[in-house]
Structure formats: C-alpha cells, structure tokens
Length: 219
Image (cartoon, rainbow, N blue to C red; front, side):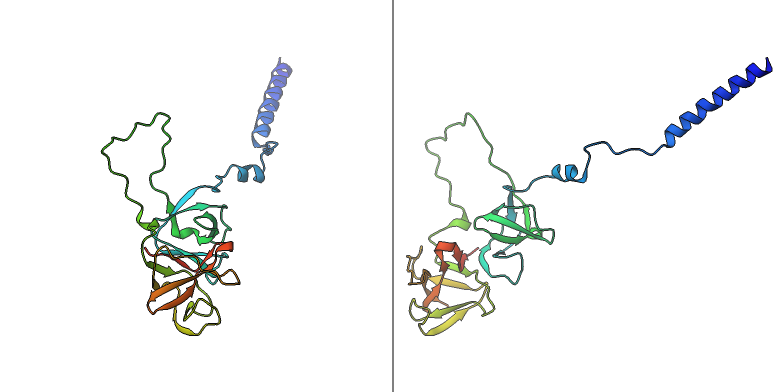
C-alpha cells in the first residue's frame, strides 16, 4: 500500500513539472509573420489629397535650398506621390510635380461624395463662384523662383541678353500687363511675360515644356 501511494505521488509530480515546463517554454515565431508583412500593412499615401496649412513653396528637390517652381496658397490642395522620405519631405504630383515639407500639409477637408442618383440643380440656382486660388483674370503674380542669384531679373525686352532694368526676389509680387499673359517664347523655349510693377519690363516665367514656372498665383 505504501509503494502504491508513493507511485501515485511521483506520477502526479511529473505531470505538474511537465505543465510548468510547457508554460515557460519559449514561444516560436508564427511562420509568415515578418517585418516585411507588417510594413505592407501600413497605409499607402500615394494618390491621397492634402491641403497647405499656409503659403509654402514646391521645390524641385527635397531641400529648402532647391529652386521652387511654385507657391501654394493656404488650403490649396496637392496630390501625394509617395509615402515620404523619412526626413520630413514628401513628393507630390499635382498641381505640379515637386517636393514639400510634410509638416506643412493638413488633411483635405470635406471630400467629393459619389451619388449614383444625383438630384438636378434647380433652374434658377446661380452658377458656383470660381475658387479664389484659381482666378485667371487677376493681374497679380508672386515670384516662385528661388535661386542663389536672388530671384528674377526684369529686362527691357523679352530676351535674356537684354539690359536688366530691375529685379524681384522670391515671394515678391509683380503685376502683369494682361491676364492671362500671352505666350512669348524665345529661341531657347523660355516663356517671357510683360509686367508693369514693380517696374515696367519683361520677366522669365520658366520653360513650359518642362512645366517649370517662375510665377505663381497670388493668394
């Protein structure tokens, strides 16, 4: 009887040790759960809409020292072209291609709702007013070109070799003679526009073939 009781005790102890050993055994990674899988689960920002928090520049490269091709006004929308470079810059594809600082962007408010059965607008309803940031009749333009030379030259003729009569810096405003300005390309494909302020003359608006614009809309 004593030996039988002892044998039962030993068996019970072995069962307890086995259960404890299983509880503290190191867990094994689940096959297929890798860092790559976790990264693929992150949100893809390409194609998403963002809005400028304030007046910011669109640079050609992800650097504040890179030339700026355009100025975004407050609440103007852009389309993201990548998920950011991890250093605070993000590439955009619209309104033009370039780079902006991600911290200067906010979520686009509202959105375009898709209604499969839209109600027709009442006949007497007036047409919606154009957005203030896309007005084409304004004579005001802001210098979006930022270069080591200090901005844009105002010349006496639409020619790079013409005498310089004045100059404007990045962020300065100029007044066009007509809006929208007529195209006036030189032999190099550079577009010139005539201005009346801060002084009368001609300034280079960049190369339309490469979508490089030196002047942007005023806010």
